[in-house]
Image (cartoon, rainbow, N blue to C red; front, side, top):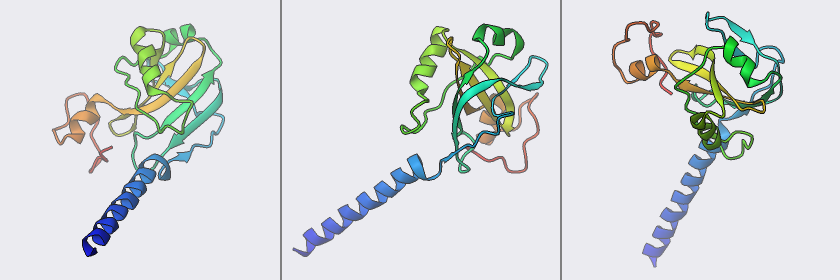
Length: 177
């Protein structure tokens, strides 16, 4: 009898801890980003200048616990064809998954649209945090999505390797995502 009670306590404790960890990962750390209406959506020109882009219906989430938890959805006021001539493409775009409750953002469909060429990816900001770029994907109908992903310099430095040539000097202790 004592063994059954002890086993039940262990199982219940494990379920409670598991539920707490799940809640922390999916809900607790995320906060809605309040748009400022000016530079929430920006893109980088081929010359390296960062310019605001006209948008509407902006929704975004972020978490201070990791620099790669940012996700955003919006609608651009300009067709994607005009953007390609003025802004820097981002060839290695790889949309990161968002929590299921942030329903405007679907990494799988964004990734499929990028792979098929239906969507175009652009650099929003390089090194928004050391080794992290903000990327924007734009669909043909003007729907836009943004996320932050590790760039080539960050991937090397976060793995503990020396800074490659052409990469900026990292801060004293780069924050690993």
